[in-house]
Amino acid sequence: MRFDEPLIAVPVYETDTSTFGKPISYSVLNCAADCKCVFHGSTEPHSPFTEVEPQTGQVIVKSFPPNNTFTAGRYTTRLTVVCTSSALDAEARTTVVVDWHPIPRFRQPTAITILGNTPLNTWLTLLAPENQFPYQLQYTTTSSAVEIDPDTGAVTLLTALLPGSYPIVFTVSEVAQAPVNVSLNILVTSGFQSAKFRENEVAVVCDSLTGEDLSVDLGTDTAADVEFDIFGEQAKCVVHQKVTLPQPGGGFSVSVNVQKRPNTFCGVTFEATLILHSSSGSSDAAVLKFSGCPAGTETE
Image 1 (spheres, rainbow, N blue to C red):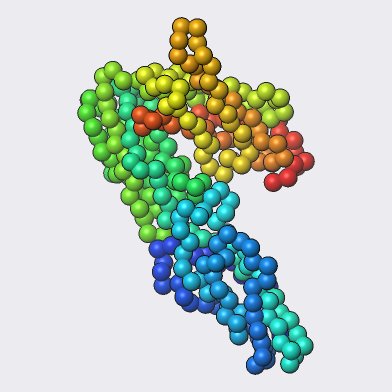
Image 2 (image 1 turned 60 degrees about the vertical axis):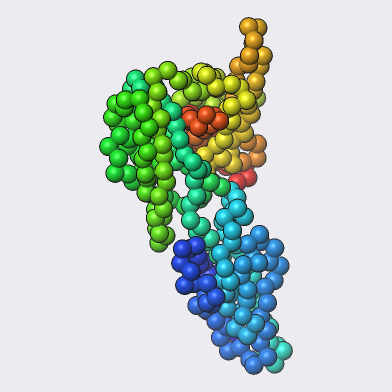
């Protein structure tokens, strides 16, 4: 006896509830009446949301895992199904890979504050889904005030804005998934200046022992207001650390040190996006351009 396929990969979408409670379409061939099927060694974090049909070995998705159970690199459940028959004195195995596609969630509320004289085409913010969402998204908006990159979610200023509040809605969609709306409120003021990177593009040498430091202009934010994270798939390859130093005249300066993470490989050269978040609701981004990385000598 044997399975139709030794490896089956199945995408499961949170919005497609019609798939829940139904078996994935494959079966054991020539399985005797005493055939018994079980999961073997299933310790994946989302395996409790699946079960195996004991007579056929078909995997059933019981329900969709909660969004807060997904983390970077943990959107796939790999299950081994083993079916045995004492009558046939035989065993069949297959591997089922479930790719979970949750609805992309974004930090809410999303708001940024800019000066009224901000130049056109200035980078404003990045619509980044939570939990390092791994699938490709498409971004659109009908607003004439801003432009959004359809592939990356980077928002830039398209129109000069007078002081005031400008609510903008973006539509975000993934293939085979119902689109979601993300709201962004742009607050335009004549005198407020939030924390920003001094440089928005930085070269980093992979084998540097000290990495690179990115300085931050705090504006009216304080050192405690500012935090950093890495956006996208390359987050696994970058280590960043906030550095706060006291100043002679009082207060603190803030910078962030970035280095390539040891024992990872993202390419001989690669780019990563470092995001600055402040408690005032503003954000900024810097593109880190890594070079001189060892070629194929490190573990992914």
